[in-house]
Length: 218
Length: 203
Image (tube, rainbow over all chains, first blue to last red; front, side, top):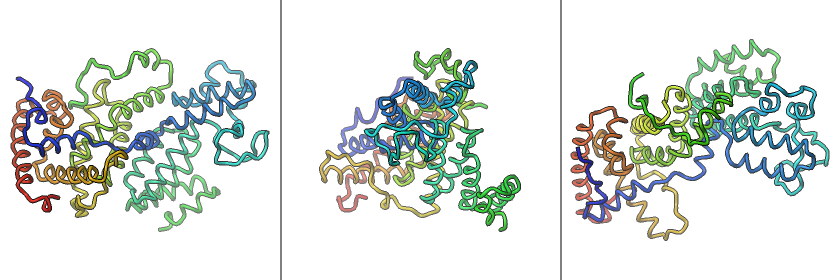
């Protein structure tokens, strides 16, 4: 069967032509790409750029090696600890120590940093240590943003994606609390209550239990 | 599971640089992320266009685009290499149908939708004209039968072939051709109605 010609190639109506072109030319905002990748828990180019700037500013060889591995982790979504440890790394090596550190290598003064630098030594303020944790934070930020914008169904989808993407994530407890919030706002109070009671049972002394207690008691 | 998205395809979407050899050396989660990222980079605008032309309002496009890719992420293991486009198009069409039903329940009107992305270089007249065109197109498409509208959008706006459309919609190519003829006739009649109307009545 011969393929028909496109209407746009054969119409003589200016309005038809304009309407078909309008349908073909629709474009979503450019920031939707990064938002979608964040919703999927995948690193964006912004994260890669900040890693590169930090690499250029790093003074020590160890820091440069660490940051190189961080950028590889960011690009490939392989957890940094996997790249460092693999099957060969010496647990006592400085790289492994850095990979397990809870503080980041300090950025040079020329690198834009929302948190003010307090000293040339390693910063005392806790900060994300690797790309995987940053990705977790972005994923949960996307959930909070969806809730704040009054979109509980989207927030539920994003929570499910977080648990699937980060089965052993460091922010699991925060994600569980967010899930309870989201279920309640999505009109599922029974499910929110069940999750809340289970959370309190498993973490009776955790400060987050106080946050979900109202759902458990309703 | 059957369906066009799972049809066997010899075409891999990964470039030579992202060969199975390289993917085999990294954890499965990373291979998934590489594939998902490529799907987003390659098909995000396609998904957004299909959603928009299938009746999703501007206010809901961002959410629905993300939902489509989240659905893809959750079903990725079931989507064969080379079938990503078909899967995303099918999912977008289902998402649009759901959005239309939700909008009907909320009794939203297209007149309330915010404008599309504004081209900074366009004049006010061009922006107003494009907005009017979009409203007109939305009105025409929303009045059409869903099956005819879908074929029209996929063939005339996404420039897919009848074979590709048949595969995505899981219908014979003869049915695609028949629906396309009726869709074109319907579209032309509705456009002619607009052309005969005074400009103040359009939109």
